[in-house]
Amino acid sequence: MLHFLAVNLNHYSMQDDEVLCNYQKGEERGVTLLRQLKTFAPEEVTEEIAAQIIDELKHDRLFSGRLKDLDIDCFGMNHSLEAVYDLAQECVDRKDWIQSITIQTVIEELAMATFTDHLQELDPATQEVLREIIHDEARHLAFGVRELSKIAKGNEAKIKQIHLRVLEIFIATLKDKRFTKDQIGRMNKTVVKAYTMHKTRLSRIGIKIPTVKEALFTHH
Ligand SMILES: [Fe+2]
Ligand SMILES: [Fe+2]
Image (tube, rainbow, N blue to C red; front, side):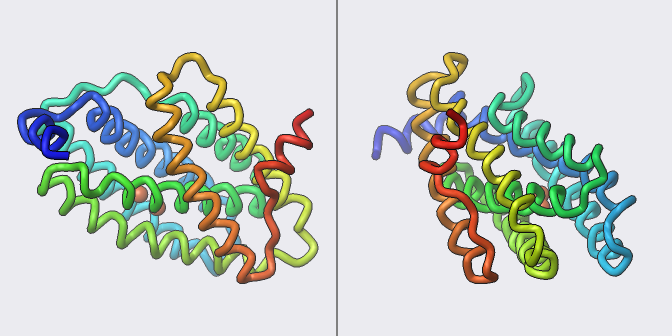
């Protein structure tokens, strides 16, 4: 523990660089997706989505500022996360509100779990930035859950389908040779936590999402 702290205080590790880069790229893609989502969302929520776009733009700015201050150069996004955003892009391209709000809510859950998991590992200035962001993401997540509760009835199959696709991405990650064992271990921990929290959260509003076992079974 002490050794870990000493290393961290001297300089950011590759792992932290990677984490911050993924955060910033995620916010950037979030903005692009939400701008499209706003064009076909139910009219009563367009104002909330507009406010969310402003939040994500602010997050992008805050993370970009930290990357600049810490002199970190980013080289793309983690492949697994990228696949999740690509799935979201596919849903907004189809202009399918149910699919889009389903994946959007998964992304917010992932963001919350990742940000909370890494908070203690980062320097005080980044922690401060992250605390502010977590506060916004919690609001975005609540918005998604509320919207899902409105449309859940009759759309169970569609909602389940998107979660199965997300699980397939995560299952593929575990076998992805582009990641080190250590990276896979860390991602797996956060993803399992996020998915478990999401499953509980959605079950409270009567939505049953598939288990990892179910995804493995469907996949084959
Ligand atoms: Fe954000
Ligand atoms: Fe968000």
